[in-house]
Every structure is written in C-alpha cells, then in structure tokens.
Length: 363
Image 1 (cartoon, helix red, strand yellow):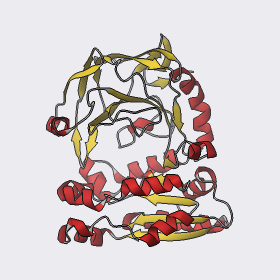
Image 2 (cartoon, helix red, strand yellow):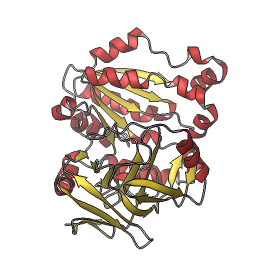
Image 3 (cartoon, one colour):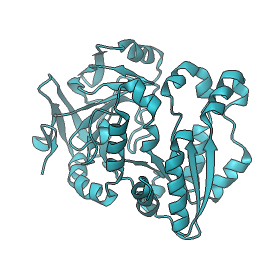
Image 4 (cartoon, helix red, strand yellow):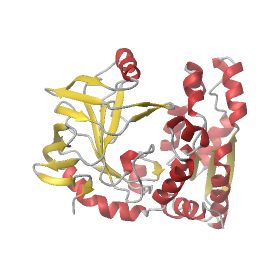
C-alpha cells in the first residue's frame, strides 16, 4: 500500500470526481514521481484514461541556463490539443529547488510565460484541475526554509486527507458572516488593531472540490490541502495596524516581522525586521493601485499546522492580503504589487460578533 493512496483516492474521487472513460492528464517533476504513480494508478482504477507528462529538473535548469529566452516557455499544439481533450488534470508542482528560481531571474519568467494562456484555455475547456501542495515539500525547500522535512510531509498528508465536505460544513457560518455588510475587526496582543468594511460581496470557500458551479464561475483549479474562507472587502476601507506573527516566504528566504499600517483606506507604511528590501523593491517597481486592501482569508483546515508554507489554511488563522486581488472572486484591483501574511492567535469580529477567538474558530 502506497503512503499516497489516501491522497490519490481523495483527488480522484472527491476533488475531481473522475468518471469511467474520462481523460486525465497527470503532470509532475522528478521529486513528485511517487505521488504521480499512485494518482495514475487510481485514475486507472476509476476506469478513466491517464496520460503522464514529466518535467525533468536537471534538463529544465540546463535549458534555462544555456538557451536564449526565445526558446523557453514554448507550448506546442500537441499539448494544447491534449488539454482540449482532457476532462481532468492533476499537477504535482515544481521545481524542487526554489533557490534556483531566484537565481534564474528573468529567464525563469520567460520559461513560465505560457502560464496565463494555459489557465485561460483550461478554464475555457472546463478542465477540472487539482494542484497537489505536497509537491512543494522537497528536501531543497525544507533546507532553504529550515523545516524538518518529515514533519512537513506528515502535516501535508494529514491536511490533504481532510474531506472537502467537512471544510464546507465548517466554513458555512464563516462565509455567511463574511458575505454580509459590516465592520470587520482584527486584534492581537502583539499590537494588531485593524478594521475594514465588508461590502456585502459573496464570500467563497476553497474546499478542494471542483463542482459544476465552480466551473461556471471559471474556478476550475482546486488546491490540496484546502481550507480557506475568503472575501474581498471594500478595498478602500482599511484602517489601523497589522503585525504579522508568521513570516513571508520569498524564494527560499524569509521576510520576518512584517508590520503594515493603513490610514484612511490606504497603506501608509510598512516595515520588516529581515529582508524588508524585498518588499520595498516590489513596491517601487509596481504599477497600479498598490496601496489598497486586497482580500481576507480565514483558515478552516483542522489538520494543517502553522510554521510551514501553508499558514493561510490552518483553522483559526487569519490571512490579510494587500494589493492585487483580481484573481480572487469579487476582486478587480490589478496591480503588480502583492503582500500577504498570516496571524495566529488573533481575534476576528464582525460588528462585534466573533468569527475567531484567540486563534480558534468561534462555535
């Protein structure tokens, strides 16, 4: 029995609901092969027809290092044809070594330039997709961020096994509250005192299940592990200070002790104790309304744990994003700037009614 059997069954049966004779693409890098093999097996076990796409990491980095940008990031008509004929898609992401992304710079951007077109076609073709977060759990990433690899992997497997239907049941109350008009307030003993207006926009749930309704709304890719309730508030209503107690991962480095302050609806200042220059560089180069509130996430996954790269889904955590939100349902702010991080142990209320109490979802 594979250690990935439960995960693979969850993806095939619950996330994508693969049916007999459907066509399914499974894509992976070297480090994801053990996961991919089990998913391919479970696709066959469901009576469907898998096709496996493989990206070799050594060849990938050799290509970026030695070839001109004009020869990178090319997708042929044969792959577009496969996407148009596929019903399901499972992606185990890479590369394994995140530090090389930083080193590659613009050439990495050239190698991934097809992304927007890929997702546009996938949405148009109503391709039911799943992105497997376990693919981010690699020895190179764990070393770069100082994680215990086995502990990280164990947490991700546990969190990925949570039934999406349970996440929906947990999140219904949260989304009802987030969908109403009212004043949302976030407080924390570390000095966080922040509030913003909810504008009555519908809140959503990332539950790890792709439904017909999701496809109708253009939301065809699910993330596993899942577990977030999210809403786009009035972008011009932020006021007060947030002191994030969880660091921000940035291509193998940490941005620590991030503090942001809003005044009269706009980001007035920000700071960090480590690698603040990463934020300032992005801020300086960004165009568009970069000083507005983006969106707010409430974590719902009971088996996810803080301290890795998945803080946003941990039950009782709150995640606040600033800047771009046009890829979030209800968001229309297009800008090159994005800054987001999590708080653990916070209290979140809407018009005084608790959503989170000291880091625990309110009953």
